Amino acid sequence: MAGSKLLAVFAHPDDETFRCGGTLALLARRGVHIQVLTATRGEAGSCGSPPQCRTDELAAIREQELRRACVALGIEPPRLMDYQDGHLSEADPERIISEILAVLREVRPQVMLTYGPEGVSGHLDHIAIGQYATEVFHRAEDVAALYAIAVPQSLAAVMGIPRIRPVPDESIALTVNVMPVWEAKLASICCHRTQLSETPILEAPPDRQRMFLGREHFRRLAWRGGRDFFARLEMDR
Image (cartoon, rainbow, N blue to C red):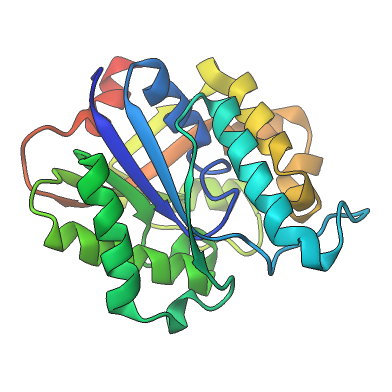
């Protein structure tokens, strides 16, 4: 696994942390080069409660939070594009696909990670960036596998968290126990200070937090065969 590379393509700062941060930290500890590419600076998000900054400062603050979160996870510094938060579905598809392709050709990953068609929460930005990243995968013939972060229906039913769009349990290709890097994941979550008040699970008892955040789930959207180091995580844990 050492020397392998993964490109994670997401919409907002904090997308890299809540549903896949533990997995990224585990991979990094095993020598995988993790590159996060974030399409927006999250300027349409929350400033926090109480506010951590002014509205006009939020983009810069969230970029800083993203950079600190990547340090906490032990992964490479993130790369950011400059698209408008909340409007990714309106972006010029060829432009954003070309920008993602340029990063991919530089990084040369074996695996890509993004959002699936449900976008986890149904957020239009999540859905859009997943569509763009999927098109990039189809154009980049040397990437072995494309994965999407997901929440299985069984977990969503137990947790009862609103705004989640779960997927059938049988569509989950990989479930990763991230408790070995639990402290790193919590540290990365805390880096996103402006968004903490928007995350109800952080108000739940510790056992409920571990139930929802202590295992991370992924769908495999596409696979060409060949070296899929990501699939080994479940076998190696």
